[in-house]
Image (tube, rainbow, N blue to C red; front, top):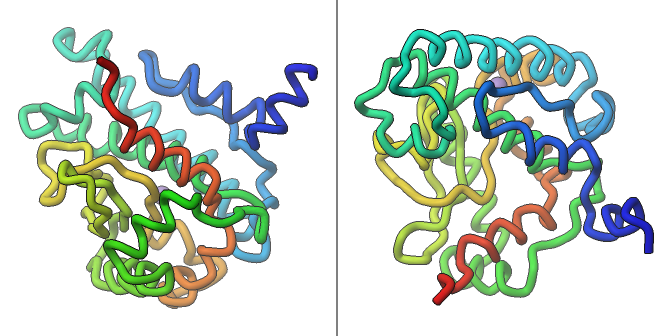
Amino acid sequence: MTVARLIRHAGLTLAALTACATTWAQPFELAPLPYPHNALVPVIDEQTMQIHHGRHHKAYVDNLNAAIAKDAALQGKTLEALFGGMSQLPVAVRNNGGGHWNHTFFWQSMTRPGQGGTPSVALQAAIARDFGSLDALKAAFKTAGLGRFGSGWVWLIVGADGKLKITSTANQDNPLMDVAADRGTPLLGNDVWEHAYYLQYQNRRADYLDAWWQVVDWTVISNRYAAATASPAR
Ligand code: MN
């Protein structure tokens, strides 16, 4: 099997692999989207993807690098290392570091409509245990998304107790940060800033939250769940 076939077999794109390798180390870089800008139509329109990735996400990357360039103590650290001590760091690092991480995670969580498969057996079992059903998970996720006043994110996380939980953060905060009310390992996050949906959905955040499940990549989410719950190496 060729490398290209192996990559396809694993459900990854070359862009996604490149993103994994180059996104998290300094200087931070804007990786290309792992699919074309129109891949998520009709759930997310092409212009939204162009502006969201090419302008909003790019600005977070540029502003993060600029903030870190001013502070030698932050240089050489990974983003996830910075998140653990975020309460002590400049707000520009919090907003733009979160912005870079959250958006990269978000792009990687999505695929073409109808191509996202289903949760793995292990993840389905955890969803049944902690929510009752996938529909109940989606309903709780929607409630959290609608309840986030202003701008922020909705997350599905694995907590320190191993349980799945839905939580929401303001602005560009995320559950990896020490400032988060609910800390844990994110499996899935949706952007409920208006810039994520306004061109197509205007004020109808509920419709965006409903439609978004069509582009969630359950293969990626299931792999994250497996990694988050793997036994530590002995
Ligand atoms: Mn955004």
